[in-house]
Image 1: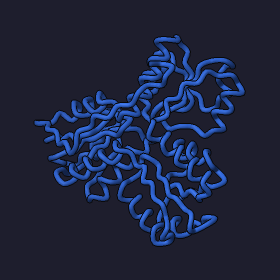
Image 2: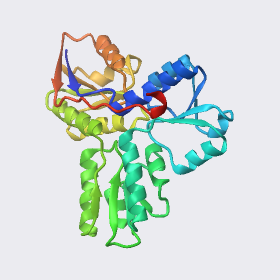
Image 3: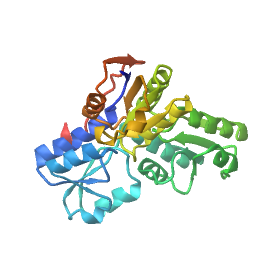
Length: 301
């Protein structure tokens, strides 16, 4: 068996920043440090931070008054920020800067009188946060059928924004449907560089291998999209979070196995999967190099 590693893979700049924020808070302020929602969608990362003293909560009422709370990389709606202020919580925001950009776009266009169509997955934390910026002006669309049915207030003043972790190809179809309906549509395609690059890598892998293993969590949007992109290219694909999830039927006598990981997956899980596969050879296929970094919040600089 040969293993071909897709690249880029693994942590993006927003995930690195978010994890660094929690670890720095633990180092500087001591445990416990409360984190609203999983800091990133990977159980290995969450459990590692929990062992170090992080406490993950879904409701700010679980955080003792006056304590430190970190907002996850996915972002939060303004109502959550207001709730934190009422409870006198010390807040450090680990929202990915590229998600913050989408929040600011939603706010700006709503204030300018536009209807905001957000392309994204219902109930995903990132979508909940973005929609919360201008709920009265924002309409959520997830499919082409929904794009054909959506009814903005003024068809001549419509802007479309996107969740950062969507399928590039599926989103293109939704945007094309919206453009056909609204000729004056303004488009802000906000799918992030890391999502785009990893999907390009998995497409390249799919041309070379018999099966693709995507290393990542079941609740990770970008990991699920990688699996779907591989399957759309005609290659069987399986989402596994680590070597413990591997099954004989995943390989099905494959001679070439492609391995890639989502933007919230640590590289050590990739290495552990490769080690369990015991391949005769391993090589890397890199489609683009990444060198993006984000600055820390001012409280931690």
